[in-house]
Amino acid sequence: KDSSDYIYSLYETKQTLRSIPNKGIGYGVLKYANQLFKNAPDSMIAFNYLGSFDNLENKHFKLTENFIANHCTKELNFNRKLTINILEQQGKMIFDLTYNKNIFTDEEIKNFTRIYIKALNKLCNKAMICEQKYSDSYKILNIENITDNKTIEDYIIFNQDQQNELFAFPGITGVSSYYHELAQELKDFKIYSFNNYNIFSSRRNKFTEFNELVEYNVKLIKENSASKNLQIIGHSFGAIVAYAAAVKLEEFGYKVRLYLLDQIPKLDNFNLKTGIKYSQILSLINNISAIYKINNLDIQLPFLTKNINLKTNEAMYNMIHQIFIWNKYNINLTEITNLCENLMSNLKLNYELKDMVSNLTVIFAEKSPYFKKKKDYIKSWQKFSANNITELTASGNHYNMLKKPNINNLAIRLKAQFNKKT
Image (cartoon, rainbow, N blue to C red):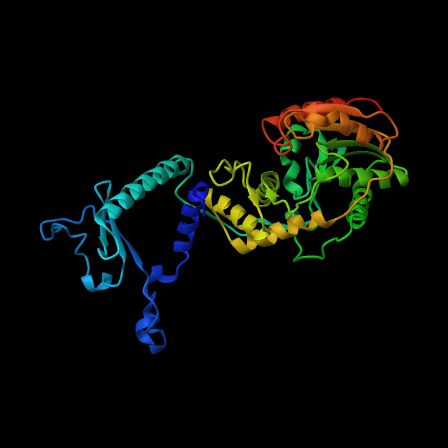
């Protein structure tokens, strides 16, 4: 990996070492136990971390001088070009380098040592800054442990005892807990927060057509709504689903007030030809966090930068997996991969907006990429509204406008719209 990924490499190496069976006991034994492997080449560099040597001395035992260099027989290093032995003692790292003088000069080894120590110091300093944010123990998470019956159903209901209804559609990788913070702000509303149908593919077939998804959700709204007067909200891709559902419901005689959060009439898809970008990775991370009910996930990490550009899905899955590991959540890579693939299945749903709704409010986040061109986007939405659009601005960006502290700002604007007479 290049130098910008050294923190990522550290944690990837750390997790790889932890996954080695029996802590490496038995490694290489076939070379000596089976003639088929007798000519297998030795590695040219040996690295031995000998652990901590604190509190080992007592009245019976004492460490000898130069013990690090003589901890094992010289024959073990006979075929190595370079051997590095390291131990920890009294808060210090002690190094011993053994090298082949037929290959390296003393000056070359001195230069190597200086560069090596400088790189280690840089790595340690960066790791200490990041590590102090996290606890010492990992939380082991499994999708089967956190997906109770409510989670894998079509929706969950917040504030069930209320009479006023609000039907809410999540973003492209969202789940039914997507609107839980909004529900805390809108306690006077019974909020039907829809699940992302395509996430749990092992439990049912995924939709492959956008109209299938819309018609299924329209059916759910008709089954659950207590009134012909509806209020529907959607964020990101959920705004597109909400719009299409509103069109269908008005055809059935419903009166719909529609609220679209930070979306334009056309959604950008993942494009492997140009690379997978920061915003797309962030979208998956945010919504996988919602699935596992993880709050305050730290994504301000050295290996996740805004100019990141991954070329394969596999690279993205590994990146997301490492972010959860970094945050001390031990989630299986296979599970992360399956979730990402299911979450992204909505990206394959092609849609075309072509009909009008009667009552449309569009709310852009002030730090969203869409905000700079919101006048153009309002004009675009106007084509799909039979009446003038209500245009509002909320605090935050595309991803955190539904999270604290920005959610309070959004809730205030929504309440003002809810209280207006149609």
